[in-house]
Length: 218
Ligand code: FPP
Image 1 (cartoon, helix red, strand yellow):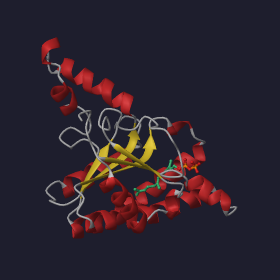
Image 2: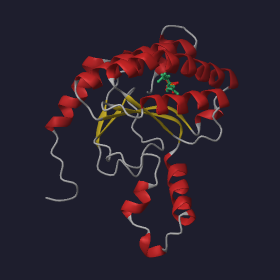
Image 3: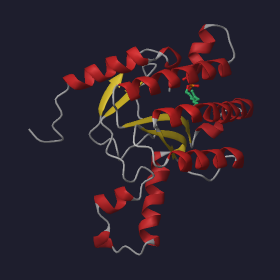
């Protein structure tokens, strides 16, 4: 969800106002994703590297997340959305972690869209933890396969990524789903995240449907 800071700076506002506007975009995109019948939507809210940001910005972001996750709860229940926290638990403030777990449990049986919120997420850490889990589960070298390792990622059970949307014109993966996006299609837009909404998501999906996916074949 890139570009919140720049969106605020363009208006001479503090960065947190950009993040607040970013939450409105989350609402709009979630709604459109449900309407479009998507199976999975993953949003990258906070990386394992984002803790390096100034303390006040991190604190405000965490407070914002907590407040809005509580507000989103009713919508998840109404729309049958299943919530999933994607990321490491260690390092997340206890109250937020409790809320995340509670939201996962309350929506676990929901049949609709699975909303993966990447929070304290880093793809390299995810891979290291999956490897550690293979060892803890007693897997020998031959038992380590794409399936057994993939199943131990935080996304275990979710399909591979089909489409990565990158807002604000950034042209890198930023440690996001390195394994899962092996054959993902890329869609890069100059639109800053707070200006991204249902129409922009539909535009990205249209572009995606024009692509010919070969998965390395002919
Ligand atoms: C990146 O923009 C955005 C973030 C680090 C935070 C995104 C989080 C939210 C929008 C809150 C989501 C809340 C819920 C409830 C899902 P940036 O700050 O790096 O912007 P810049 O690149 O313009 O500086």
